[in-house]
Image 1 (cartoon, helix red, strand yellow):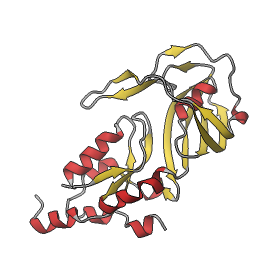
Image 2 (spheres, helix red, strand yellow; image 1 turned 120 degrees about the vertical axis):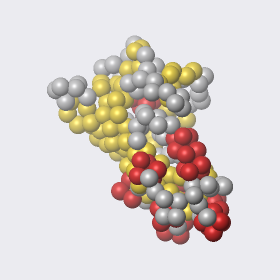
Image 3 (cartoon, helix red, strand yellow; image 1 turned 120 degrees about the horizontal axis):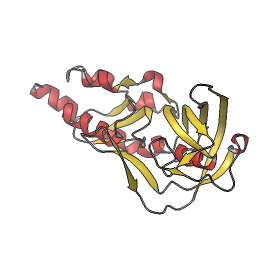
Image 4 (cartoon, rainbow, N blue to C red; image 1 turned 60 degrees about the vertical axis):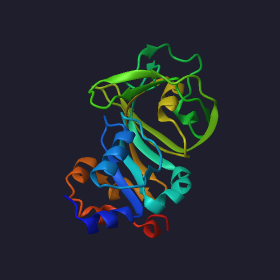
Length: 227
């Protein structure tokens, strides 16, 4: 149980909390859990991350929410695996199989400016459920993204999957890229947002074990995070 001094300190806490989100948890659940567990008042985030994906998720505390544009606008780095030659309505492995696009993009073409459209369907995991549901999010407007680097490894003989690494601008939707490539996104891990790295993130399960009195030591000051 936090004492009054600790509660006042947490109310005034500003900074960034770098969380290593595990796959299978909605990013909104991370925000709600952090806010509730540590009795925080103003909590935001620096960009969503699909439930099926793991990796760097930035929670903004107090005054750090003023800098949400800086975090949202930063480039992103990912690693993951794709299975080529088949795809789904969500673009990832939780969706329903659909026919391949008539014109399939080659991996070497997935660089530079790309026009993307977010898949109409999205796999979501409801709170308290171990299953993924397919949600119809409606038609989406096409937008421009930029891929700086996209590298694909050899296909694994046993799984049929190919590892990849990706560096892209804000807003890039990896599930949509998989669909354009005639592939299914099997796994995804975000490793960087701008200068912020997964190497400095705290695993979500470890964060849940953190005592409320030690929580401020997990928060990166704004001056250090955005320099």
